[in-house]
Length: 224
Ligand SMILES: C[S@@+](CC[C@H](N)C(=O)[O-])C[C@H]1O[C@@H](n2cnc3c(N)ncnc32)[C@H](O)[C@@H]1O
Image 1: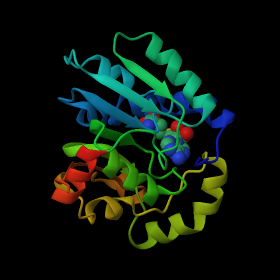
Image 2: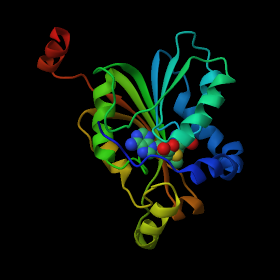
Image 3: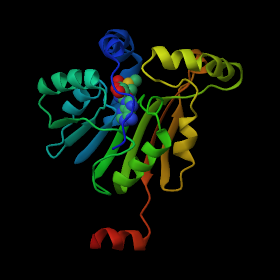
Image 4: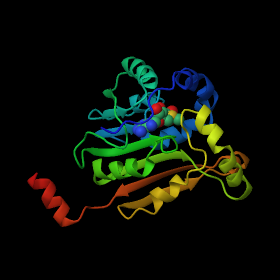
Protein backbone atom coordinates (compact mmCIF):
# COMPACT_ATOMS: atom_id res chain seq x y z
CA UNK A 1 0.00 0.00 0.00
CA UNK A 2 1.18 3.51 -0.76
CA UNK A 3 1.94 5.42 2.46
CA UNK A 4 2.53 9.16 2.40
CA UNK A 5 4.04 11.10 5.29
CA UNK A 6 1.18 10.87 7.81
CA UNK A 7 0.57 13.05 10.78
CA UNK A 8 1.27 16.71 11.41
CA UNK A 9 -0.48 17.30 14.76
CA UNK A 10 0.71 20.90 15.17
CA UNK A 11 -0.32 21.86 11.62
CA UNK A 12 -3.71 20.19 12.17
CA UNK A 13 -4.24 22.10 15.40
CA UNK A 14 -3.27 25.46 13.87
CA UNK A 15 -4.93 24.97 10.48
CA UNK A 16 -8.43 26.27 11.23
CA UNK A 17 -7.35 29.23 13.43
CA UNK A 18 -4.78 30.35 10.82
CA UNK A 19 -7.26 29.96 7.97
CA UNK A 20 -10.20 31.55 9.82
CA UNK A 21 -9.86 35.03 8.32
CA UNK A 22 -9.26 33.94 4.68
CA UNK A 23 -12.06 31.38 5.05
CA UNK A 24 -14.47 34.15 6.04
CA UNK A 25 -13.32 36.51 3.27
CA UNK A 26 -11.40 35.70 0.09
CA UNK A 27 -11.98 31.94 0.10
CA UNK A 28 -15.78 32.02 0.24
CA UNK A 29 -16.16 32.67 -3.49
CA UNK A 30 -13.54 30.03 -4.38
CA UNK A 31 -15.14 27.39 -2.23
CA UNK A 32 -18.57 28.12 -3.68
CA UNK A 33 -17.04 27.68 -7.13
CA UNK A 34 -15.64 24.28 -6.12
CA UNK A 35 -19.00 22.83 -5.04
CA UNK A 36 -21.51 24.78 -7.13
CA UNK A 37 -24.16 22.52 -8.72
CA UNK A 38 -22.50 19.25 -7.69
CA UNK A 39 -24.56 16.13 -7.09
CA UNK A 40 -24.08 12.36 -7.07
CA UNK A 41 -20.78 10.80 -5.96
CA UNK A 42 -18.17 13.43 -5.15
CA UNK A 43 -14.60 12.87 -3.99
CA UNK A 44 -13.10 15.60 -1.77
CA UNK A 45 -9.43 14.64 -2.05
CA UNK A 46 -7.20 15.79 0.82
CA UNK A 47 -10.19 17.11 2.73
CA UNK A 48 -8.09 18.37 5.66
CA UNK A 49 -10.33 19.53 8.52
CA UNK A 50 -13.34 19.57 6.18
CA UNK A 51 -13.37 23.21 5.08
CA UNK A 52 -15.60 22.30 2.13
CA UNK A 53 -18.15 20.36 4.19
CA UNK A 54 -20.42 23.31 5.11
CA UNK A 55 -20.51 24.22 1.42
CA UNK A 56 -21.61 20.69 0.48
CA UNK A 57 -24.23 20.95 3.20
CA UNK A 58 -25.78 24.00 1.55
CA UNK A 59 -26.25 22.27 -1.82
CA UNK A 60 -29.73 21.18 -2.71
CA UNK A 61 -28.76 17.75 -3.97
CA UNK A 62 -30.57 14.86 -2.26
CA UNK A 63 -28.41 12.27 -4.07
CA UNK A 64 -25.11 13.90 -3.00
CA UNK A 65 -22.67 11.50 -1.38
CA UNK A 66 -19.26 12.90 -0.49
CA UNK A 67 -16.20 10.70 0.04
CA UNK A 68 -13.62 12.79 1.88
CA UNK A 69 -10.15 11.25 1.65
CA UNK A 70 -7.67 12.41 4.28
CA UNK A 71 -4.49 10.50 5.25
CA UNK A 72 -3.44 12.63 8.24
CA UNK A 73 -5.15 11.20 11.37
CA UNK A 74 -5.11 14.60 13.09
CA UNK A 75 -6.82 16.33 10.18
CA UNK A 76 -9.17 13.38 9.72
CA UNK A 77 -10.39 13.49 13.32
CA UNK A 78 -11.30 17.16 12.88
CA UNK A 79 -12.99 16.44 9.56
CA UNK A 80 -15.08 13.65 11.13
CA UNK A 81 -16.16 15.96 13.93
CA UNK A 82 -17.17 18.64 11.44
CA UNK A 83 -19.09 16.14 9.27
CA UNK A 84 -21.00 14.82 12.28
CA UNK A 85 -22.54 18.25 12.90
CA UNK A 86 -23.89 18.58 9.36
CA UNK A 87 -26.88 17.21 7.52
CA UNK A 88 -25.02 15.89 4.49
CA UNK A 89 -23.87 12.39 3.57
CA UNK A 90 -20.07 12.47 4.05
CA UNK A 91 -17.72 9.52 4.59
CA UNK A 92 -14.33 10.57 5.91
CA UNK A 93 -11.84 7.95 4.74
CA UNK A 94 -8.18 7.19 5.47
CA UNK A 95 -6.35 6.88 2.14
CA UNK A 96 -3.62 8.39 0.01
CA UNK A 97 -4.43 10.23 -3.20
CA UNK A 98 -1.73 8.21 -4.94
CA UNK A 99 -3.53 4.90 -4.36
CA UNK A 100 -7.30 5.28 -4.20
CA UNK A 101 -9.32 2.17 -3.44
CA UNK A 102 -12.13 2.98 -5.85
CA UNK A 103 -13.16 1.56 -9.19
CA UNK A 104 -12.44 3.28 -12.46
CA UNK A 105 -15.11 5.91 -13.12
CA UNK A 106 -16.48 5.67 -9.56
CA UNK A 107 -17.06 9.42 -9.12
CA UNK A 108 -19.13 12.08 -10.83
CA UNK A 109 -16.77 14.80 -9.62
CA UNK A 110 -13.46 15.23 -7.81
CA UNK A 111 -12.63 18.45 -5.94
CA UNK A 112 -9.34 19.52 -4.40
CA UNK A 113 -8.36 22.66 -2.52
CA UNK A 114 -4.73 23.37 -1.63
CA UNK A 115 -3.88 19.67 -1.85
CA UNK A 116 -1.69 19.08 -4.89
CA UNK A 117 0.97 21.26 -3.26
CA UNK A 118 1.17 18.71 -0.44
CA UNK A 119 0.63 15.27 -1.97
CA UNK A 120 4.09 13.68 -2.13
CA UNK A 121 3.65 12.11 -5.59
CA UNK A 122 1.23 14.61 -7.13
CA UNK A 123 1.60 13.21 -10.66
CA UNK A 124 0.56 9.77 -9.50
CA UNK A 125 -2.36 11.27 -7.58
CA UNK A 126 -3.50 13.10 -10.71
CA UNK A 127 -3.44 9.76 -12.57
CA UNK A 128 -5.72 8.45 -9.84
CA UNK A 129 -8.07 11.41 -10.28
CA UNK A 130 -8.24 10.65 -14.01
CA UNK A 131 -8.91 6.98 -13.25
CA UNK A 132 -11.68 7.35 -10.65
CA UNK A 133 -13.57 10.07 -12.54
CA UNK A 134 -16.29 8.87 -14.88
CA UNK A 135 -16.24 9.99 -18.51
CA UNK A 136 -17.59 13.54 -18.59
CA UNK A 137 -17.06 13.91 -14.84
CA UNK A 138 -15.61 17.14 -13.46
CA UNK A 139 -12.34 17.82 -11.74
CA UNK A 140 -12.41 21.16 -9.90
CA UNK A 141 -9.35 22.58 -8.24
CA UNK A 142 -8.09 25.48 -6.17
CA UNK A 143 -4.32 25.51 -5.72
CA UNK A 144 -1.41 27.82 -5.05
CA UNK A 145 1.42 27.50 -7.57
CA UNK A 146 4.95 28.70 -8.21
CA UNK A 147 5.15 32.37 -9.15
CA UNK A 148 6.92 33.87 -12.16
CA UNK A 149 10.15 35.87 -12.16
CA UNK A 150 11.54 36.95 -8.81
CA UNK A 151 8.56 35.56 -6.89
CA UNK A 152 9.18 32.12 -8.39
CA UNK A 153 12.89 32.23 -7.58
CA UNK A 154 12.02 33.26 -4.02
CA UNK A 155 9.63 30.30 -3.80
CA UNK A 156 12.47 28.01 -4.90
CA UNK A 157 14.72 29.33 -2.13
CA UNK A 158 12.05 29.16 0.58
CA UNK A 159 10.63 25.80 -0.52
CA UNK A 160 12.73 23.47 1.70
CA UNK A 161 12.00 25.47 4.90
CA UNK A 162 8.36 25.86 3.99
CA UNK A 163 8.06 22.13 3.34
CA UNK A 164 9.45 21.42 6.82
CA UNK A 165 7.14 23.78 8.74
CA UNK A 166 3.97 23.70 6.63
CA UNK A 167 3.01 20.02 6.78
CA UNK A 168 4.88 18.97 3.63
CA UNK A 169 3.50 21.76 1.41
CA UNK A 170 5.61 22.56 -1.70
CA UNK A 171 5.69 26.28 -2.46
CA UNK A 172 7.06 25.95 -5.96
CA UNK A 173 5.01 23.37 -7.83
CA UNK A 174 3.59 24.23 -11.23
CA UNK A 175 0.51 22.17 -10.60
CA UNK A 176 -1.60 24.13 -13.10
CA UNK A 177 0.61 22.88 -15.93
CA UNK A 178 0.15 19.28 -14.81
CA UNK A 179 -3.63 19.77 -14.97
CA UNK A 180 -3.97 21.89 -18.09
CA UNK A 181 -1.56 19.94 -20.28
CA UNK A 182 -3.10 16.52 -19.64
CA UNK A 183 -4.74 14.98 -22.72
CA UNK A 184 -7.26 13.06 -20.64
CA UNK A 185 -9.01 16.31 -19.67
CA UNK A 186 -10.73 19.20 -21.41
CA UNK A 187 -10.40 22.61 -19.76
CA UNK A 188 -13.78 24.26 -19.15
CA UNK A 189 -12.63 27.14 -16.95
CA UNK A 190 -9.28 28.32 -15.69
CA UNK A 191 -8.38 31.48 -13.83
CA UNK A 192 -5.42 32.88 -11.95
CA UNK A 193 -6.33 35.29 -9.15
CA UNK A 194 -5.22 38.83 -9.93
CA UNK A 195 -3.66 41.43 -7.64
CA UNK A 196 -0.59 41.86 -5.49
CA UNK A 197 -1.11 38.82 -3.27
CA UNK A 198 -1.39 36.68 -6.37
CA UNK A 199 1.95 37.97 -7.60
CA UNK A 200 3.49 36.89 -4.29
CA UNK A 201 1.66 33.55 -4.15
CA UNK A 202 -0.40 32.82 -7.27
CA UNK A 203 -3.69 31.07 -6.63
CA UNK A 204 -5.39 29.27 -9.51
CA UNK A 205 -8.78 27.68 -9.88
CA UNK A 206 -10.31 25.64 -12.64
CA UNK A 207 -12.81 23.14 -13.89
CA UNK A 208 -11.83 20.32 -16.24
CA UNK A 209 -13.92 17.50 -17.65
CA UNK A 210 -12.73 13.92 -18.06
CA UNK A 211 -12.63 13.05 -21.76
CA UNK A 212 -14.29 9.86 -22.94
CA UNK A 213 -12.00 6.87 -22.53
CA UNK A 214 -11.00 4.97 -25.70
CA UNK A 215 -13.47 2.28 -26.78
CA UNK A 216 -11.11 -0.59 -25.86
CA UNK A 217 -10.68 0.75 -22.34
CA UNK A 218 -14.44 1.07 -21.94
CA UNK A 219 -14.96 -2.49 -23.20
CA UNK A 220 -12.34 -3.83 -20.80
CA UNK A 221 -14.03 -1.99 -17.92
CA UNK A 222 -17.42 -3.43 -18.83
CA UNK A 223 -16.02 -6.97 -18.94
CA UNK A 224 -14.14 -6.84 -15.62
C1 LIG B 1 -3.34 22.45 3.02
S1 LIG B 1 -4.32 21.10 3.47
C2 LIG B 1 -5.84 21.46 2.60
C3 LIG B 1 -7.01 20.84 3.26
C4 LIG B 1 -8.37 21.18 2.64
N1 LIG B 1 -8.51 20.64 1.31
C5 LIG B 1 -8.66 22.66 2.65
O1 LIG B 1 -8.93 23.22 1.61
O2 LIG B 1 -8.61 23.25 3.73
C6 LIG B 1 -3.61 19.76 2.50
C7 LIG B 1 -4.20 18.41 2.87
O3 LIG B 1 -3.70 17.41 1.97
C8 LIG B 1 -3.54 16.23 2.72
N2 LIG B 1 -2.64 15.27 2.04
C9 LIG B 1 -1.30 15.14 2.21
N3 LIG B 1 -0.84 14.10 1.51
C10 LIG B 1 -1.91 13.57 0.88
C11 LIG B 1 -2.07 12.46 0.02
N4 LIG B 1 -1.04 11.70 -0.33
N5 LIG B 1 -3.31 12.18 -0.42
C12 LIG B 1 -4.37 12.95 -0.07
N6 LIG B 1 -4.27 14.02 0.75
C13 LIG B 1 -3.06 14.32 1.22
C14 LIG B 1 -2.97 16.74 4.03
O4 LIG B 1 -3.06 15.76 5.06
C15 LIG B 1 -3.81 17.96 4.28
O5 LIG B 1 -4.94 17.69 5.02
